[in-house]
Each structure stands twice: as structure tokens, then as C-alpha cells.
Amino acid sequence: MTKDSNGMEIFHKAPVPKAVLTNALPAMAAMLMVLIYNLADTFFIGQTHDALQVAAVSLATPVFLIFMALGTIFGIGGTSVISRAMGEGKEEYAKKVCSFCMWGCVGTGIVISVLFLIFMDHY
Image (cartoon, rainbow, N blue to C red; front, side, top):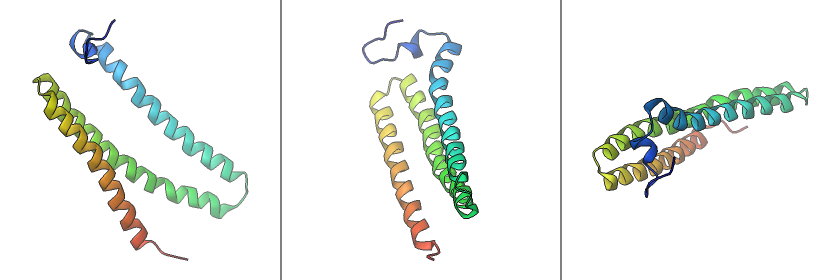
């Protein structure tokens, strides 16, 4: 299957199951890599036999998941608006929404990071 000038042929001509699979596989691979990354962290830090270090990884994982959840909120909401805009032929609006979602995610991440640093217990 060849791509048209803006790479959108899969959305115009491919059967729905193939289009969904083509777009879902990279997302599933990314989630799997995050899981493997966290398991590897726990495994290698567990080799030190230091319970405090393993506990630190266990405590940091929920914080990491908070950041992932915020990114997912922008990603899912943004792709919904972008897909509707693309279906209506509003490519410029879709680009603006994409930009807003990306910078909104970055800004939210910075704000949450600053809040974590402000309210963190310093030992």
C-alpha cells in the first residue's frame, strides 16, 4: 500500500481492523517496554540486597505512572479531537490541537514536577 502525499492513506483506504491494528501495535509495544523497563529496574536493584533501594523503586513507580496517566489524558483526548478534525478536513485545526496537547503535556509535567519538589520531604 503506497502512501498519499500527506501519509493518510491508511485512514482513507485501509479496512478498519487493519488501520486500528497498524496504529495500536506501536502503542502496545511502548506499554510493554515500560513494563520491561520497570521489571529490569526492580531486578537489578534487587541484586544489591538492599531493601531500601528496592523500596525506593517501588515508591517511584506510582509517581512515574502519574506522569504517564497525564500524558495519556492528553493523548487520548487529543487524538479524539484530531481524528474528528481530520475527518472534517480541518487539517490546520488538527495541527493546533496537536500542538496544544504536546505543549499542554509538557507544561503539566513541569508543574507537577515543581509541586513534587516543593512538597517533597528532604532528608
